[in-house]
Amino acid sequence: MQRAGPLSHLTVIEFAGLGPAPFAGMMLADQGARVIRIDRPSKPGKAGGMAALTARHSDVLSRGRESIALDLKQAEGREVALKLIERADLLLEGFRPGVMESLGLGPDICLARRPQLVYGRVTGWGQNGPLAQAAGHDINYTALSGALHSTARRGAQPTPTPGLIGDFGGGGMLAAFGVLAAVLQARQSGQGQVVDAAISDGSALLTALIQGWRSCGLWNAEAGSNNGDGGAHFYDAYRCADGKYMSIGAMEPQFYALLREKCGLDGPEFDAQWNAAQWPQLKERVAEVFLQKTRQQWCELLEGSDVCFAPVLDLDEAPRHPHNQARHTFVEVNGITQPAPAPRFSQTPAAPCQPVRAAAADTCKLLAEIGYDEAAIAGLLQGVAQQAGN
View 1: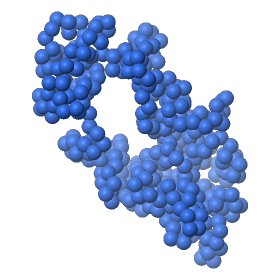
View 2: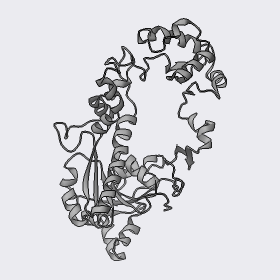
View 3: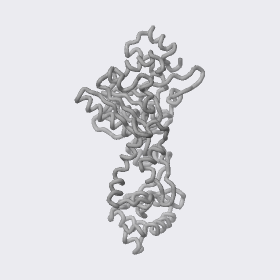
View 4: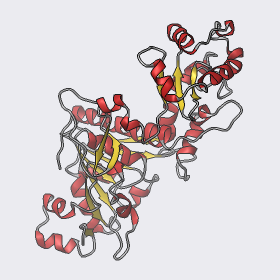
């Protein structure tokens, strides 16, 4: 597998799961890390478990991995996993607290085999606390952190964001940051550690700015009434004549002045930009103005100016926008459109995205790599391990 990027010196063992842990693994793999995913074997005659899910070629979160399928409930399967861990820099798992311990693969055992190991754990509620063992999803973690509240319109219910704030921003990305920080420390000290990345913690972290504003009276408790949550007339998305939307973020005085000039907002009522009491009425006026032209017409009028605008693009339109095309923000691999690795590095750029490999595609190769001969591999394939196609 082609690997290039600033993390090409790292080896990661990832235990197959859903959501935030795979996203963290994808980020690491995107930047060159060798990520070996331990999948569950599928049952004979039936596509089952995580192996079936991760085998789908459209599962973008699984890109960049090698895969071995092991039955971790058997001692021989666990021993194979530990042999892989002995050669790794870090481990990623996203199970409920206690699951890895019940498998005999908890931090104490793994760190005993590899003292420099960084053991990354991603959960919804964290490894401890009253809710640690409770089931949950992104909407629950963001709700408890206060982040979900900020997605509501004035007088309306909060709007769930599909994993953006919780699973991926507050979970997977936080985990990727955490394990890399711990790897740097391990390189200095020779001692690994456990990284406890809770989505509820990460979601709370993402509210740092508005928590600060709230504490000094710059952010109202009522959602949808503030300058950055759709309360202000100069910071919102507006429906156009064709039913599509345009985003406006003209906060600064010079940008606001341009917005008024370009959109014909001449009335004196627009002079007091920061008079929040007038925002609801001014929003109605601005909404009427944007309904007079199509989204494309507004783009043509505002293009090249500092109004702070952008069309609200859907998932099909975004890859076709000239800016995204110029930066190669999206790529297509085997007919699957997906975001390209980010951020960009000048000296160690990432390799092009490769097709997602099937679960268990690399079992035999990896077993050989850690010292099993052909006879031993054949024995493991009889019940502990699985190779794609077998």
